Image 1 (tube, rainbow, N blue to C red):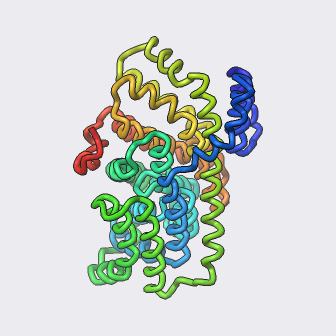
Image 2: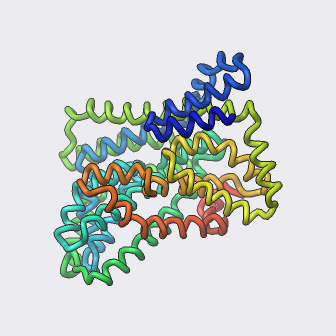
Image 3: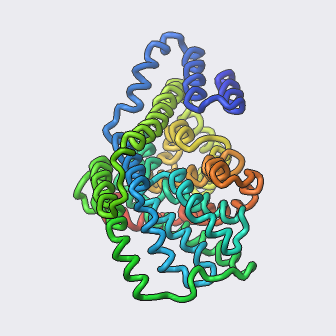
Length: 426
């Protein structure tokens, strides 16, 4: 195991693509245990992605591409600006609210951040916001994507752990809102310190009503996705397919959908989906090697030998998640650590849905946690803001998100309130 761990660390820091890091580490580990295990590697890779639950991932990604390509996001932004733009710092609040709505449509932090960088950042700078604050706000708001359903992160965890995807989708609603509110608190403190202006002079009921009517087709899409799943009208996979149709219809309603761009959208969606599934397949090799070597049980025994206090163990898990999230890509981290941590969670009697929610949120926050925050890289590349400046400006948002998540880890009644209403949690 030591040699495999050394290979893992070396290849990770050398910048080898994460899927190959996982595959190589798993192969070496299996070879060191028994060379005969190498013959089952193709079967394990296939088994890792041979799940009907994963089929919703490409549908959600395609739906996001169709929404963005149809110009629907611009209508949402116009409505949100009219809704909250009249308060001081309204444009910053509008950015958070817009990100929350887009997250329920796109489900991708990179997509949300890319759109907001293009549309909102120039306006933020024009209104007097510091460039790095605007970039940090957009990056932080972007990570609401994998928290507010639909979420590919929840789908991956559910597939690996056996937890209900519907339950996780419902559980993500309250944390998503709470984290958005925590961002609003950070914005309020910044606005007060810099005395920033209103985005619009006053609320105009007529203008607000007009922008709402125009935004209705765009607002219907997240309602179809989340509402349909919660009410049991269709499965998460079916909701993804319905969302694709709804996105096309909304784009046609606005007369902004260009069917000539569909092949490019499908190509981008296919590339993103393939990357995620390849990471899961490669991670399953490593996961299988850990299972064969009985690593989950050994880690659990070591933790319980240290302490049997449930709340101390939860704190230790949270601290491990922070370290892992700072160093690894979220999908890879979930693929590797889910089997190990689920064993510990089961031993201390923590609800698996509750743990899955906290784990996925922590790995999502990692997307904006220096030094390996992927969304920070995307935001920096698009906005042309230096990464070092973004890393510093993002820290208050990271702290706010961590405070909310730590609280949720110790308050299961708050975290699981919505799924319990629908019978999805203990």
